[in-house]
Image 1 (cartoon, rainbow, N blue to C red):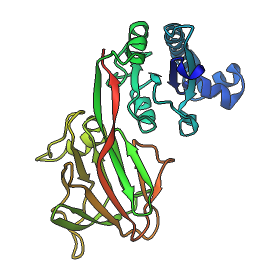
Image 2 (image 1 turned 60 degrees about the vertical axis):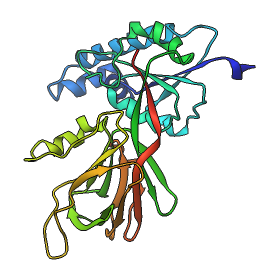
Image 3 (image 1 turned 90 degrees about the vertical axis):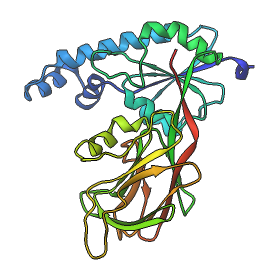
Image 4 (image 1 turned 180 degrees about the vertical axis):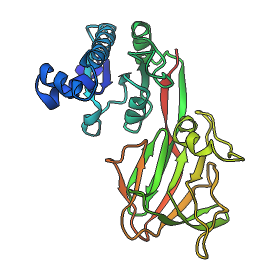
Length: 299
């Protein structure tokens, strides 16, 4: 019977204040730690209280007869989402990217607890809007923006999906060596790694890479069904080139990357290095537009 009762999953992450208490044990010890570094605990405590008020307002917007679950960012990889869930993210924009790869079409309502602090690109709604948006999302009546995601498949069967971008290369500052192929073009590289960005990620890491370029490559909009790849600081040599350093990945024409890294090669998504795939020498990665999309509630 419970399976027929709607369930709302609220996704959060610990505030800075909560982490300080976890590390130092008491408020007084946390305060001393901050003051010795020229910081005030009142500031992080104020942010914490604003978050708690927002979370309380969101929780009150969920009908009492419905099921509800709260999951921390650190537990997402162990949490089982149900197909009919409605997901509410309370926090910064990056938290939406953290949860996106674990979803398969469930609508996501992004709630911004601190509009003056977080940009709100993926969490555009105020806590007060949850009362109307949560039921609309649950009943699949909300206006949803289907945001494109990126997927990588390794030749050993491992797979990773990301909302903003994927990084392929060495896990440190050392040179990343690989062969790159898209369509009928191929080139061997020694670089600072490779970024493959969606339209959502085009305003983040990809933007910082494109900014100093004399002729920045085109980047997609969040719902466009194509991706942009960007090579960071390609080095020209007798063995490596700098001609194929950016381009588009269209449906049916994936990007193939073959690792020539003896050690330290990794693939990770959305800046989460802990959730990485090993990309050692000879391993190949096929990167394409993901079959799944993020269903982001707009109104």
